Length: 349
Image 1 (cartoon, rainbow, N blue to C red):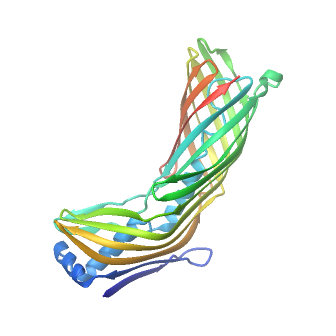
Image 2 (image 1 turned 90 degrees about the vertical axis):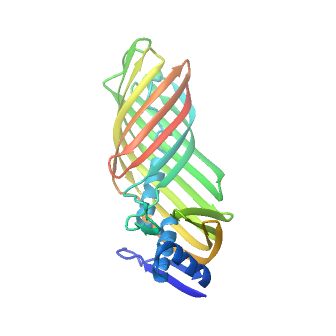
Image 3 (image 1 turned 180 degrees about the vertical axis):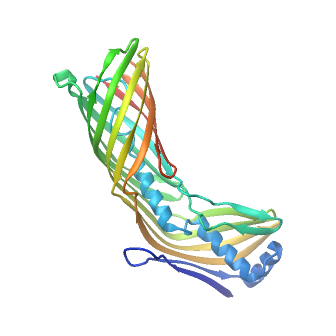
């Protein structure tokens, strides 16, 4: 058996550099056959497959992936803990779900050139995601003689398994909201909800851990499919502690429909951490022939913080039927491409 290894020390860190290792043990006969099929010399194949594994596992730039991951987790609490739509003058409670993604500067392009393959890995960063489900409750103090002031709380802890990962999710939030220059009009015709100024504290965390083997498959060329079957330890821990400052406005038309929009600036204080210790069985399908290419050992320990200041826009729509309010909301960061989509049901009394 011949071996090729890649050991990277991630530099430019204020703390000591953290290790990232991808080490492949090849089957000599399969290595030769795969090199011939792709039109590569063996050293080029070694580089190609090492880079391919780095791209598949998001190891080309772990700092960037973890930064995006922390940003996505911060966005996963948006829209779940405060009310921005129709005017309420009493109690409100409900449930919402948010799915967020942060793409940053992403390029996972594989460029086939005949039977030659070039893998662009300089900026190959997977899209990072975050998600939360939360219960919320709030009260507008207009009904007790303090117009314009409202308080909201939200939170939930729950386990959830997805594909080969076990996850635990936690979120908690508290918001205070003050309305100025409104409301005005009547909801049965046209009601201006006023300008709402909202701030508070949003906490969320998601932990994912590999519980069984998982597979990946990539087309290296028209005639070559590259496969991995991985087992071992894989942990991704996302945490977010965010202070939002938001300004929004709403408009209700014919009672049943409310639209709202605005913007905000967040101060995120969270981070993401990954720990990999994986063994991957490597195989390839060349035409109708199956090859056992070898085995890879992937080890990573790294962490990164969320951006310290994030500006974003938000827009949403709400359907109102009696005390029931169904809403959808989109938050979009003005830096990178970070987006969160929230939806849910609320009941106002």
